[in-house]
Length: 108
Image (cartoon, rainbow, N blue to C red; front, side):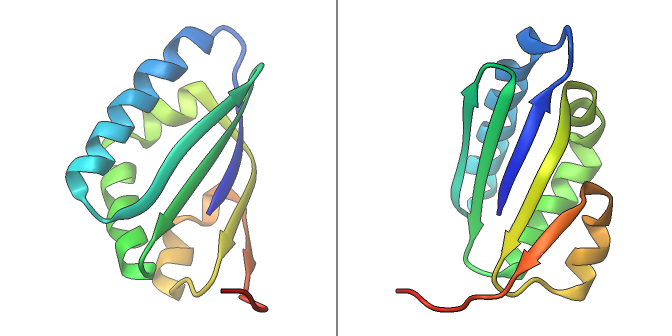
């Protein structure tokens, strides 16, 4: 998935500590293939990759339970994209983030 996030006014100093906490938690979960944040000004891009929809769903469950409120206090999801197969159950869990879903067309 790719997420374009905007840091809300007055929240810039809170972004890096939360990203560090989230990254440590994702590393401990051990199911992410890629989990990285990139910043330019107040715009942040989030890249996440999982081996399958189930791995992403396990992350989402933990995120929603432990971090979503703090995340949404700091970041405004602006554009969210999901790539490859995503289960209907997972789509339901992330519906409020406004994802656009893309099927694989080709590649290696």
